[in-house]
Image (cartoon, rainbow, N blue to C red; front, side, top):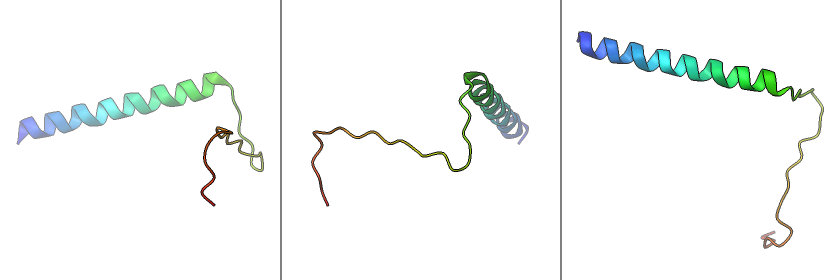
Length: 51
């Protein structure tokens, strides 16, 4: 049981570090999103139209 708890602690710690790294990347990248900004989705113009 101790081994499972140890692995669980390692997994949670790893996820926390990854989350903080992703947050730091988002902060330092400097791209700010404001409410109401349009979301640009770029499609391949040669893609088939299924509508």
